[in-house]
Amino acid sequence: MVWKRGTRGRRSRRWRAALLALPLVLSACSTPPVPDEQAKPAPTQEADSWAELMRYVPGLEAQGQPFSQPVASVQTAGANLTITPDATAYAAASTLATGSPAPGSDPSQASVSTPAWHHTNVGLSFEMSDLADPRWEPGASSLDILMSHLDGPVLRFGGNSVDRRVWFTGSDEPAPEWAKATVTPEDFARLARFAEATNATVVLDLDLGHKDAERAASMAEAASLSLGERLLGVTLGNEPNGFFLESQPQYAIRDASWSTEEYQAEIAEYERVIHARVPDLPISGPGTFDAKWWRAFVAAGLSNTVSLNSHWYPLWSCPGRQGTTDAAFEPTVANLVAPSMHEKAERIVGMAADEASKSELPLWMTETGSTSCVGSNESSRTHAQALWTVDYAVHAAELGVSMMAFHSMLGACSGGAPMSVVCDTGKQGQPATPDLNGQANYLALLFLAQLREGAVVPVEVSGGGDVYAYGVAAAEGLDVVVVNMADPAAVGSSPVEVVTPAGLELREASQLSGPSLDARNESRLLPLGPADVSSVSELAPGSATLLRFDSA
Image (cartoon, rainbow, N blue to C red; front, side, top):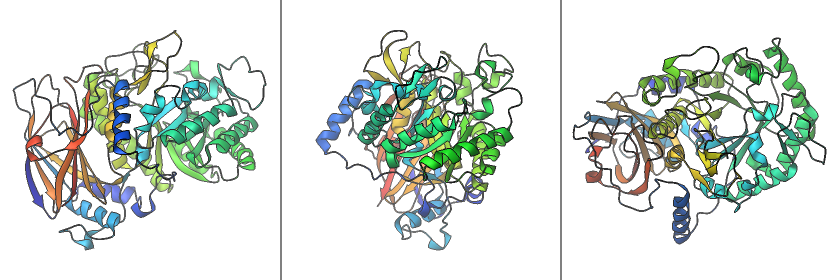
């Protein structure tokens, strides 16, 4: 890797659009308030904790190793790459973060508006029915080990189950026939202990499907009493735009007359009853994949609204699903790494970000993943899925998302949901075990959890059409993430030239790599370790690389 230094850089069109459309003020961060981070453990404790984590995450390597990249299996070199962080944007963000200009920068160019990367951009979403699982008790399973290393993740509970299959009760009432799981105040008390142990925060969906505002308010009150400030908000129903869809009759809980006007009337009643019990409870919503419903939620004018929530699964065309199908949206490895996936995020997430900006609300992606298809498919647990997860998460932050939760489950790895970030090492249909493993996309989240919080600044890439790069400017320096979607089974490493802003030095690097894009759970994560120019003279194909620059 050839290093060049410069004092100024061109401001990209993406950066200008972010400044105009997404005025997120860094000094008044749009991320929700979270409790103070717990004190970091002593080095020996941290090493022991990481070694324990390695037991449950195949492909995770030990901490503190000097940075090295896998030897390319293909001799044909990849494209020559030039990576150029926007020096002007970095200088502006550095000025905000430190209160003083970056070395060699022009303070007159500083701007206060920029998208940002928060620790809440790493999170997991679960079905509400999973909340009743006793493995949320700290120490009862490997769940707390997996979550505690994600730098204060968001845990969202909702999904299709909340409006259709979950019953809440604060007494010994018998559950109705439709209920497949029962949630009680004791479940929230256990979740509070888990959140405290892992420094997690929580977003909770409430049952809107059964039109029972009093019971929803009782559930919200129980959650609030246990979780306190760790409860960032409640959402009234999950994907209300899907309460009636002709293409998915199995999920219908309203009839064909269901409309945004009826939705607004119902959530207004819920808000009144909930705030009578918990006056200051934050409300977020609508948690839909339809712009018309985003606008309807905002127009409802609920008090103490804290965010606009969106859901998105880009690969929605499932084999055997009724209705429209499209080969470009099927869950394949080729589709996961295609440039069109990056462009879809630009368009769809950008549209949600525009709506959030107009409403002066932060944008939360409270349920997402690469595909909404059930059952295993070609893309399940592949290295391509891990690379897509990294690129999508940072790209979404660049577009304005301040919270992201990837949909997951506590079921078995064998026969269970193939896109889950974590899963039980047992088999489907057998009793649950305490051993849950992190999958390839867990390694992606662990890679992302290493990022420092700060402003997302543009990074220009030339020489390769399947390479994406981003910068995160913090008070200490600049983190640069480079995602190379080239298949390691087809192309070799790429020579790289990085033009860094003045006053920065490479100190550490980390890499997520794999033998091929279609390799299943063969991804490898080398955590941040000492790096120098010689160790990063080339960029491995099929990799996500974090380059950490500190102020010289």
